[in-house]
Length: 580
Image 1: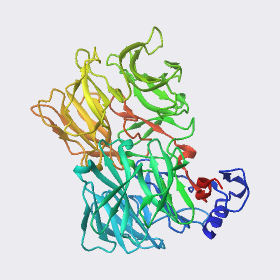
Image 2: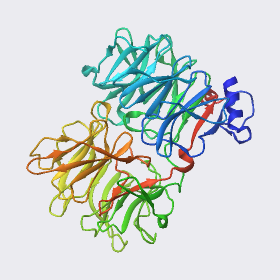
Image 3: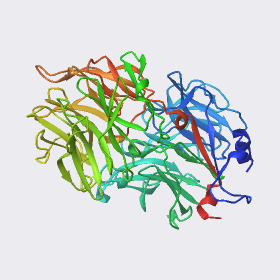
Image 4: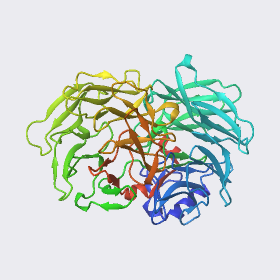
């Protein structure tokens, strides 16, 4: 394990190693941090952000420095990671089997660049995820199916399209198995929820797909015979796997938790063939986020009175003087509370004290803060005065997952709720603002729709769909009087309306974007324009920022600190799994 020894020495972590078991025997499992260079942070607004080579000697990371993104490469014998020239817009890296090339995505295209230096080379034009086989082929996802091409270009061939008879909706995240005759894939069944995905194997010769009977996403094969994969919530597990039989041969064992994961199942981990598991934590340590006011040109105004906390989902009051925000671990099994802050003084009022309380929103007149609460097996929408006086008022109730998100509308108008479906996934429903119990469906034109946002006048609803494995933003009249209109075309999430309804802000692939919106005489959405480089904290399925009433500044979450400056390596992870 020369590469492993090199990592330990390069990290300077011999005395700081965290052991998976209290043992010092040879071959024990070790975990340690690999730091990025000064002023470089792990990018938080792209897909997969790291990869380890098959021999465990090279680690690739997507880093940001001074608002500029690039791939960084660190060998086990290097003191620190170095930027790879020409990869300024790169993300989702992986290595060729021999470690001589770094494969990555830029926009929707696939590129490769020599790890020893050289110019990037275009490989494919439209790719969602890809894997490089040991026969020189690239197996990749496109249009919900699995395709195959040569790493040097040439003919592209559809391997497998989703089989409706087996209720397969999408095939994704291919990982070519040794010998390049088969690949691991993710089978999406039902909705877009990670819990509806299963691991599978596809034959690259005839397209036959086998369901392995394991719930999970983003599988990777690891010698001598394991599949390492992710589950919802950021847990990464391994299960024994027979390469010859292409079948699971044992029970799964959880390896690490709290790994970053994003839309579509992409999870920040990678495995080598000699026992190295690399991963990036997805949730910052406590007290590591700050608030910043960012104008439409990207200039930052700090809000020091607010301090540092594990903030999520900040919402500004209609007058812009206060902020409602959730604080606490975002996992469903955890507790969390809702607070109201005075932006000028930093004084805060705690509105909740037990159970899980998330996703606060202000009523249109600013008289109440509404939030989603969960206790045991019940879920509620609760309204409370922002100063904490008086009793909390339960305005809607149900069984999970009745309430995922809430978008309050104007008085005597309609509000929007995202709710879970029995078959998996989620949908948007509408209800009178004064009576959230009387809900009716909203036709989003897609099976799965998330992140509803009502326009200031309540006549338009912005929402995000997850069709074809990509999140795109649309807007449609609430009354259904017209078709939905696309806002984004190359990825769009987290919509927020301008206070006067003249524009929609959203998160693009690399920038915060804005698109003009005109209602009369018909609904017209302008071409989105980038506002500034998006280096701020993002949410998977809920807007993690807000706009000030002036419309000239956005309230952003900032400062990942230590959680954003490092990756972790778990060495000899098979020993941790086997308990040896």
